Image (tube, rainbow over all chains, first blue to last red; front, side, top):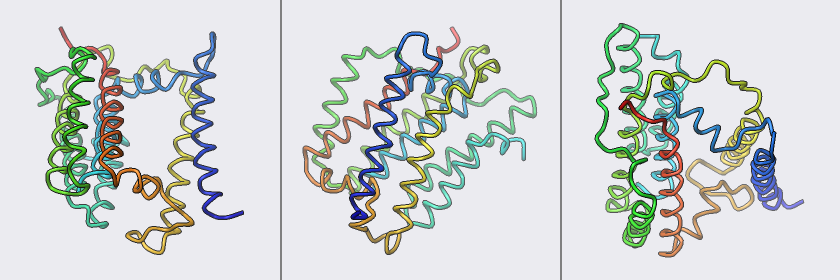
Length: 66
Length: 196
């Protein structure tokens, strides 16, 4: 297998797994929380929400800022 | 002083800042390092019984109507998307919403929501933890297989390398900025309610 194809396939598989978990979480009586619920839990503490928002800010800087 | 390091977020931010500094990303390193140090200082003050220095910000993103935020995000993306990547105008434009978002996430919340709920069953979040850890490890593996940290690899592209071709155009940068802002908005909307 071409290494590039393998790399892209695994990225795709991880994204598909995330989508599948979210779909499963949205089913009635599911024990798995949605991604939004996980974020809400993290955002309950100051360090959690500041860390999460700092991570988001870093992504913007990484892709666009010098 | 060590009390502040018990929270994993502080060392994660400081380590990330250190490695960003090693990679010559001084602005990123300063940003992450400053957030980490202030968060650390705030935790140390809290352990000594002092009230948090963080005053409630007058700006609460959750109170801004979604339509207004969406319109502002489109306008921001349309204007800033015209700036070259890694230029000073782009850097300043990105730093402004980033700094506002971090500052607005700092203020106190209702006492009941200030700590993570002890009764939460963290095993339920395991599927999400596995997905994000897998993504992080796979990204790291591709990075380590590059000829160097500053030289891209065709065979082992990171997400950054894959995005380069799209972010090279005005449309790509504008869409990328819009997605980034919408994710930030999604996160800030999940911030717990403030004290009345």
